[in-house]
Amino acid sequence: MCGPGNGRFDGEAAASLDEELWVRGLDYVGGWRDAEDTSEELLHALRAAGLDTGDLRARADATADGSGVVRLAVPVETARELAMLVRVASARLREAG
Image (tube, rainbow, N blue to C red; front, top):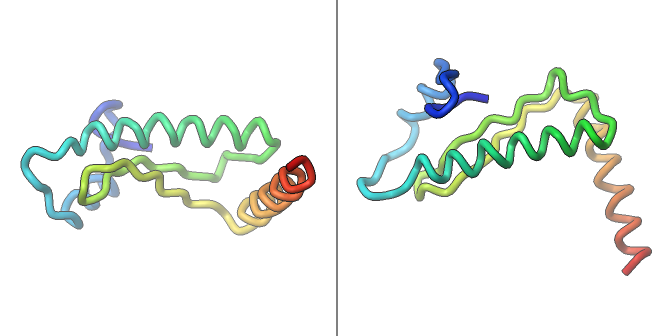
């Protein structure tokens, strides 16, 4: 993860700055901070569920309207495991409801 708040503002993040039109007055940093916190929360939840997050990337970003977004890059095998976890959790929620 990278961004202005943690000193890891790498080339990929800097390149994404050029992809959006920045509008004066929008709180892009607030959206990015929210996404940064949420990306950490997501990684912790995935680890707690037993997924190997070593090759997983959750990158915080902000959209053109200033809202936060988490961009997730997952190896194929991890994506399969994540899909299985979501299916199992969904089934359990339907049974409980």
